[in-house]
Image 1 (cartoon, helix red, strand yellow):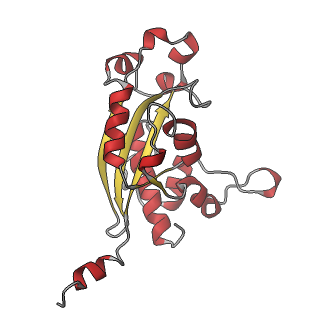
Image 2: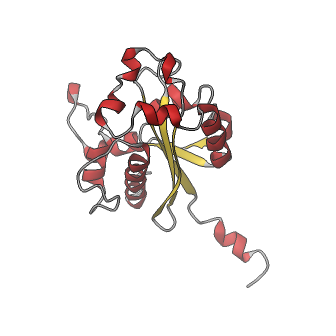
Image 3: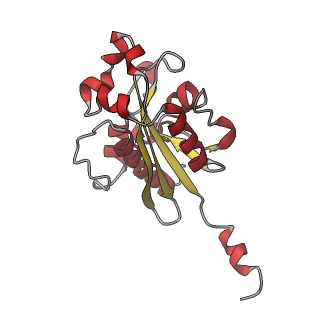
Length: 202
């Protein structure tokens, strides 16, 4: 093979994309709410595979939280507890590790506006200058799921809806039950991304 041929061929390979998910104490975003669970999967669009890369509960000083935050939906509806957050690695340490993992990478999530614009582009995460953000999986799923919304427009699908409607079988192994933890949701979103790419819609 002539010199340089290997690198020339690699130009045509699809890039890996890192799919991130967060679980938070609310929907308002920074500085009112907090990321309490975060996870990342690496998706090989070339091979159609998903690799779990990172997952951590995020530590906070929960003693300073008001009762509304302590009673957030995430603590009432999943297996994540206040005690787990109190004992987890500090948020600044988790943020630094996440920046190191994602430095220079292509990154997305199922809901980019929520995960990044409301949380991860703000302190202490500050991911914006470190990553290359790719299109939102949820927005690319919307016309395929075609779930009726208001004013004759499609609504944004929930992750479970997109997974059920787009992904054949159950490669994430959720068996119809979404746990709403960051890692399981990142895995689900990763398989949606793979199918969107196979359809030529990503």
